[in-house]
Image (tube, rainbow, N blue to C red):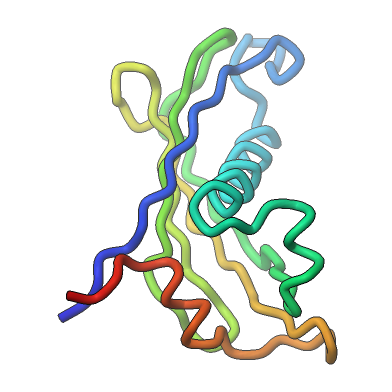
Length: 140
């Protein structure tokens, strides 16, 4: 039986400097929000804060992000982002992200592909089983 993924959740408030001329969250800021969300979640849920990252013996690299823009996010709006690791494929963690507005309506989704890089060789490697396990609820 497949284990349930751990779902990361963070809240964000859209600021004035993040808006386009139509007072919507500008396109590039969606990628930043999704990336910052994952980093905040790693610190909160896995203990991988900035000081810790350099000691882990590996690095991660966001190789690809596919963002679907479904509804605009306006200035001063609060958004919630959730994400989880759907699966691991060799070097890659396949992560699904969802951004919702205060009413719970989905505004954007993101498929994020994050590669595992061995710090010693600086080359991609398969995600070790013990690291994969940190993204799923304990068995049993």
